Length: 241
Ligand code: ADP
Ligand code: MG
Image 1 (spheres, rainbow, N blue to C red):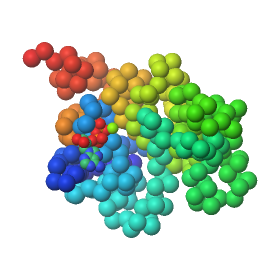
Image 2: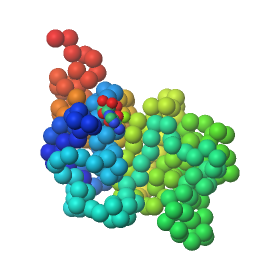
Image 3: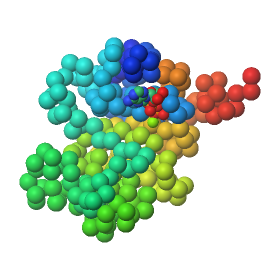
């Protein structure tokens, strides 16, 4: 479970996240939406310990991130898989070694790495692409490699930062389906950051709307899209006042 309490984050004195409060339960797919520049990526980076915050608290499974040493933080980060819009793959490595990278960093035995990479390649549908470099793969295939890499350390959480924004509609649907299947199989908690309402409606149970660094609304996705409160209308441009 992730509990964010009164979180404040600024860059060089400019406030980016303002008094954020959020609770994300285990095994749910949670959507975080808002226009570009509101602080979505910054919030994810705070959750993975990649950004420090000035005040407030982030507790993940009861562990407060702000209390962790650098060493403990590194250990802790194994729990958090991340995927991005631009895939963030290493161009000179083939798919196998991109997926294997986190396990290689942690010096797992070679046979264990091979078994795990092959298992994930099969689950993500790229078993015949393991020898390909990123430049030889389609966008959808690259994101499958990135998903396999994000899951290779068996994380409890998967954070997706605009992970379908660079994909065509067909690949988007396929990747969303894959994420749903993986969530069921591994019982992971997924946080989906996006500005695409289709993605939220297709994938998430609960959501939060971020507006200028603040959480303007949280709730059940179906209810929010049925009732269309003003916070949603503002976001999707149906606010005519
Ligand atoms: P989003 O992901 O919602 O598009 P970001 O979290 O990337 O938004 O950015 C939120 C705000 O913080 C933006 O105004 C951005 O310019 C600023 N910002 C993000 N990262 C940095 C940084 N490393 N240094 C200074 N400002 C930053
Ligand atoms: Mg972003």
